[in-house]
Length: 179
Ligand SMILES: [Zn+2]
Image (cartoon, rainbow, N blue to C red; front, top):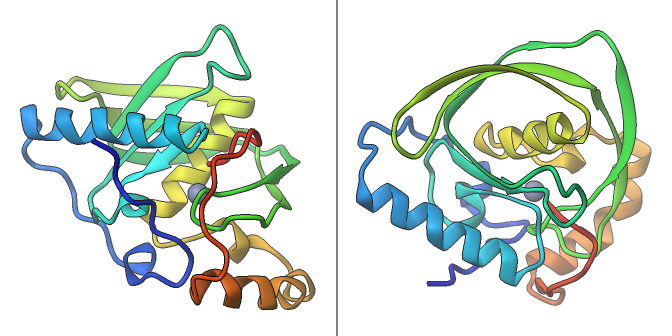
């Protein structure tokens, strides 16, 4: 089942997310639907608030850009540490169509999370996956990638954001590997 992707301006993107207490078939169905929704939009990452669900869950599949990577599910993730080095990358977001901006982020993280069967993990992750995780994790923290921009950059995209919020610009599948 495809979910509707919530775009900039929707309250759910700025709503506190709840810890997932029941890791069951219902959750696994949500995960399956989120992957389906993400693939349909040609995204590589999708967080639950983007599909109108305020729970601590996101999914990632970097296979389109990294053959070694496949589906990953993060339930109740917690980033414990950020590495010292940072890099820049032009990010996009399925919830903020047409806007792409350079965002500076740490290149490595240490994260704990559960999978969709409740198993616990504690991992150090670096490279592009670390960036995508931070972008999706931000969604669980009510943060959007545009929040990381300078006030000058923010003022330059203000008009486009208004158009997204008013529904003039809608989500379209693109091949830009958005998050
Ligand atoms: Zn996003």
